[in-house]
Image (cartoon, rainbow, N blue to C red; front, side, top):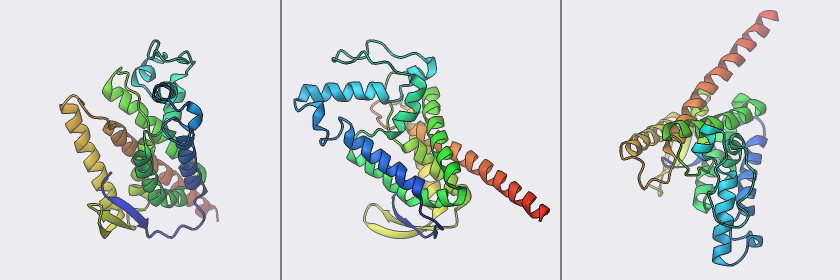
Length: 253
């Protein structure tokens, strides 16, 4: 992601419960997954852990071919326990809570911690949760449509968090965000600059990845782009609906 945000100066009016619960859920799922060294019940031997990770990923991650066909892959693994049942559309939801490693998890959660409270406060808790889930699903299917029926699993909350950033650009672009540039220099930037830079970077990486055929690329830039665009659209729609509802109430009074 573009820079490392540390704090946003928007004064939230209430505790961002949904944001904190989403962060807690992502951390808990990671710690309980075979990707975490804390989850010792998956076995201590190398081959046991590798098989556990493979089965876990195939079971809960979003796989473009499954999303596009609606049919679970068969024979994708030779590990014991690979005969699980899976609903492909459900994986578009579960994949948002899976992370490949600590760095992947922390990077996503930092962005959610900084930008989530503001968007939650501006949209309201239920609308914010609907936006998070909806843009995450849109990012999954957008990635699947852009990649075609490939069998590479996709995990991570980046698509949903990109949706939160897109909504932030609509609802609170005036805020200023303290950001670590190059990982060491703290700079106070307008929120829209950081968010717009993030989108531009993801878009350029997406275009570059598409031009090279995506070879050697393990990041789903397409999901970031589609999630962000979905967040902008959803933010505009929700904000417009709230504005019109407020105007009607004012007319009544």
